[in-house]
Image 1 (cartoon, rainbow, N blue to C red):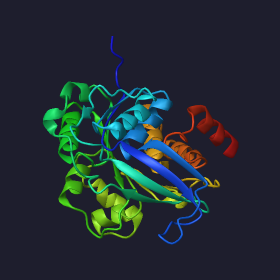
Image 2: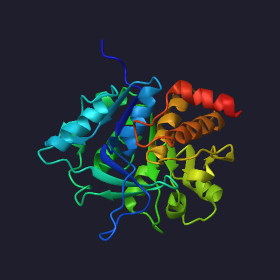
Image 3: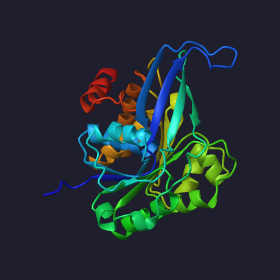
Length: 308
């Protein structure tokens, strides 16, 4: 009998090429990397790996290129036992490739993606409705927008939950596609600047309350070293970040999402989930890489016990 899937994710699965440097390279001074790594990345895929490592059963729906890069990307996700039965091999070279430059001093990073990174989306007719709605949660990041929207509608018809990783933005205003996806979202977790762009309100708690009117029941905005801000109909609160000496912040937000999904699956209250996800994200920053640095469930619990 096939094992039930707890979380299905539709979105990014990126091949990351990570380079840790004392400064950004230039044509005149290319610098000397202190470490290099090829690892899997992407918002949804890395969140699923986190949840899988924590003991949940997950499935990824997305694309792989038909070249060597696509094969490597497939191997880097398959090693974590995420179900890949409903992925699509596209008749094109792999396009979701990113070079990640990591600042040795702060652990912050800059991303350089391929010029065709936003090509070759899945379409709704490539999805299996029954496979998707067996899950308790659907996790999205806005990639494959038409397919993601259709899957979200199916989940709500089946009485299931949708989480949207909205990322961060410097834009003053968002496009219609973002509003439509937020309206189909139960748990909205964004990065810095998103709630302001969504609502035109500067105060994060006021913006979060306005975002609740669009559809979500939980709104969270993450702010890196400043922690996160949670807004529900019943309460709002700030969860401070745990102070760690960051080596690489790549994947910290994705791990936060995966850990948050784990907390939801355990029926924890939102304050406990926020602390748990924050601890998991902090531990993620102690090594280079988006997935190889994901902590174990025991490590997160131990960290929380020692810290408190």
